[in-house]
Length: 208
Image (cartoon, rainbow, N blue to C red; front, side, top):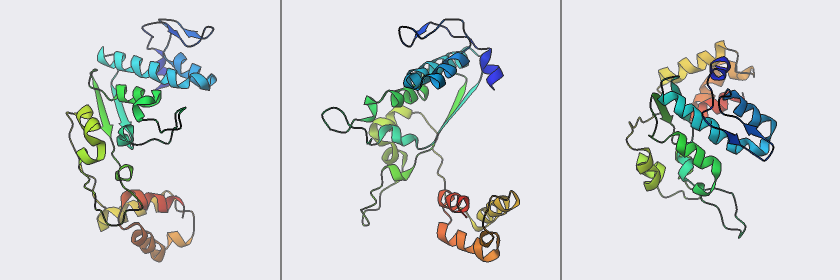
């Protein structure tokens, strides 16, 4: 992949600071290297890289697949505080805006997969309310209208056959570290504790 990216050239000059620049016609991998070597420029480099990838995809030079986990957090709450000690909204954060631009519909020849997580809208202290988990509730009205049009796909709990097959896969790959987890009793405990939830099962197996 790195070799392919190094053949793609920048369309414009990028002036990161007075002394740090990336000239037009340079490999876009230089933007990545700039962000790694100068972390304080990383956010700007992410925006520049996303812009170039969208452009090269639209011209047909490459095909781009974008996958974003917890994508609804782009319209959720933040823990970042502003100077007046109030919490910043996601739209105040440069990195969030770069990702929003990446998943916008203003480019071609790509595919975007967004994973919405209900924990973004759930309140751990509220044991009474049962929230709905439709795209509108998960993304909020602003996020919902931003990602339209889209094809919603509900991820359901594992069936016994699916979770058994995945356990066997982890077993064969020797990703189950403890001896107890590699027994039939351990398998049943992992299934019971995860309640067939894909995320919880993966996390439990990762630490057993």
